[in-house]
Image (cartoon, rainbow, N blue to C red; front, top):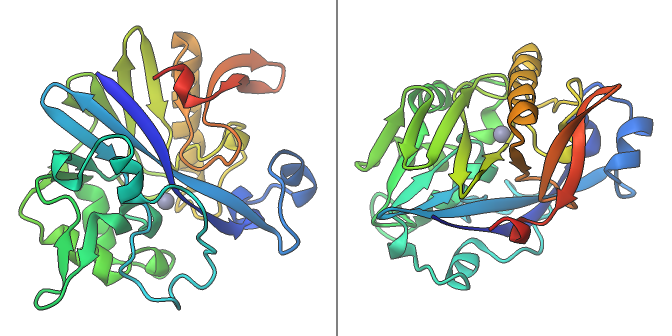
Length: 280
Ligand SMILES: [Zn+2]
């Protein structure tokens, strides 16, 4: 197995929205905000080579929506999706599988590009099977007022109509050494990849634990549809990770890529923080 990770781009969100009910006096000490109360989040994607598969986990925002859609996202920096892949030796045609943890726009937007003519879009990775949970796809297609902005039709429609779609039904080993856990608090059918790499187990915590600052059980995003489920799911995963010395990998933490865990009087917290290059 070969692993790599890169940051597609940074974007900004309101720090309060990212930490829910936690007061700014507390969260801003561990995740600094700018003068507009915004915090910077990277969009780290994983590439996993195992057997005959080259798997890309999440695709960033993509470029299908207009300026108005992106007016409060302040996208900046990062390597870019295709540039990041290219500098690691991958062309779009090399990707055999795209695993979309869920269909919020910052995770799946890059799976399709605009094209001229009908239907107006084409797959960014023409040889890839796209993996998404059935529950998340059905949820996104049904739509709801809370997540309306997260599911623009020009992201969801192409995915729903893609012939090479694998609808994941539950926890399973998708590829050799690459399993997924399904969580439902952030949004129904969020996939959390758990990867066996050499002697280590790596958890790509996605939007369940977006940053190291979200390890405390009550430090959760306002974006979560069901906070109590997030608390339960996060608690379960953190206990398992602690007992088995897993490494957590963060998709959205500006400063910390990876950590291990230990128990403290306040609960499970990060022990060592380190770069992804130290494990891959
Ligand atoms: Zn999300």
